[in-house]
Image (cartoon, rainbow, N blue to C red; front, side, top):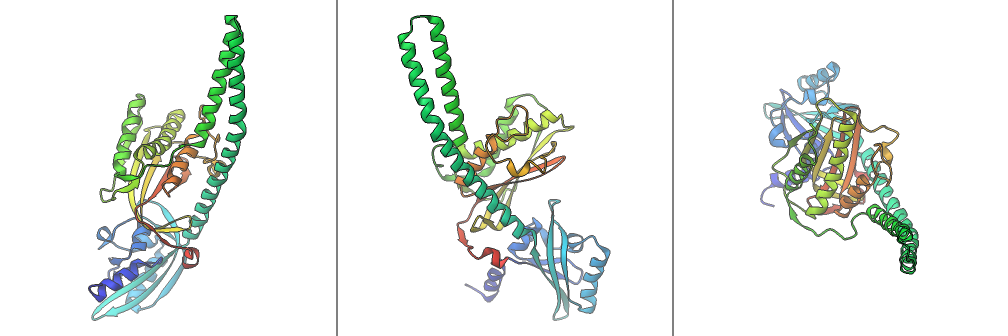
Length: 366
């Protein structure tokens, strides 16, 4: 470590608690990486921003902040609704501690994200659901594919003994239908080969998906790119990641078109997230891909089941696109989450950039 300040800066960045320093005008002077993750902003972009409207719209809370500066009065706020740069709200606890540095007055704000424990619990549930689903499908595949092979073999033997062309048509139907069912089971199982990992740019994946969506038909869905050019390359299988993102984006497009949404659009967004937990592993850096649409949304009753095979809310859906996408992303040590309300559905894909750190005590440290 070159200097003491670099040591302190690194220590602050390793904290799960968000740390923000503001001056006497409530303008942001410093934030650690956990704060960047909650704010959805880098420190460079946040410097000089007014912290007051971000922390609260309440006049009482704003008065408490100003009183903390003027009267050096610390306070704690529980279950405050925090407003991020992307328009998302999250529930936090925060404490405000005034201190002086020479002739300057500052506030040290510590923010603990209450939604974090809820999110970790939900992620564990999603991963457990996916594992259960995979085991169920593998068992089903074994029980179904063996009889199908026997049926097809019997149909071929029968066809070799028949001379009447009309009867041969029936054996041909049997063979084709058993092949169709076998292919369906294979699709339910997802990719049957592990990903071939190589360095890739997630924006190249999204551009390929955009072109495929635009080439499929002449529907008036607008594709909006909202890319963060600072997202570094990740290790992944280019073709499999295209398939995963395409499955989600295609579902979004079909839902928008069936619902006949006014001014239909799909937003492809990329961001970096710091200190993000997937399952039991915590990653210092995560690449997040959002696929957002302004369609009808997913009902609260259905949203917990959408990653199960054969579950679909569309009349012509197969219910296989999302489970296959989740399987691909899980094979990349990642995760897919979904948030939905009428007029806005966001599928977020989280892919590790950094190697995981030991987070066996993550829940205890939150």
